[in-house]
Length: 103
Image (cartoon, helix red, strand yellow):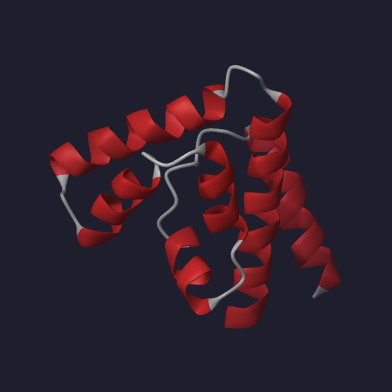
């Protein structure tokens, strides 16, 4: 896969995460991401994780915009996303499979 295809797949995953969190009034996926980010930061306080910790303090609408941002900055942030536990393994594999079949 090319870098562009990987970025497009990451954006598709982010869109699926956003859909899941949008449908959930409790925003459980957002809570999972915050917990993951805190765990990661305590074990390895990298700048990317610190950046996500700050982002996760914003409103859901702002976080949503960051996740769906198609700029170079958005692409970079999606490379270290703390939303890894929001989708089921089956949902993730469906996205991976769809991108594999296209190429």
